[in-house]
Image (cartoon, rainbow, N blue to C red; front, side, top):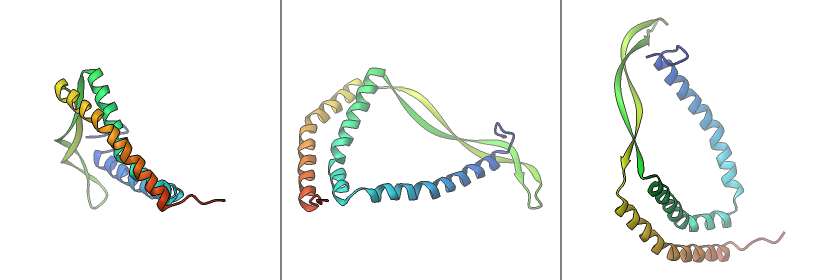
Amino acid sequence: MACRSGKPARVAREMARRYSRVMLRVALPCLALLAACATPQERCINDAAAPYRAALKERAEIAETLARGFDYVTEFRTRRVFTRCHRADGGFVPCWDRETYPVTRRVPIDRAVLTARDAQLARDLPALEKAAQRGADACLAAFPPEDP
């Protein structure tokens, strides 16, 4: 199957792979620099607060799903497509190939389950907040701020 630019699907996949490799070569050092910019104290506090932030994020997602009334599920399916394959001499030959594509669909939600999970998170949030505060205090004790 040819992509919109007229190139065979296999060539398009190879270009995507190369682009991904280039992006990794560029993005990883940038992320490493950003991580290196955080002080040990900041990293420690960030790690201590992670469960609390995750619970807040999950509550926001539950509220959004309840307001919407349905959820999305993405499945990946594979199909056979007739395309052109590269030959050793540089030419092309017709052949069958496999293509994976995402299928996103709406699914009904179970309001009772989501409401119960939201209530459980609401009960857990004060304890998670206290744990995050204790972790932050421990981080401040372990990594005292440096005076300039």
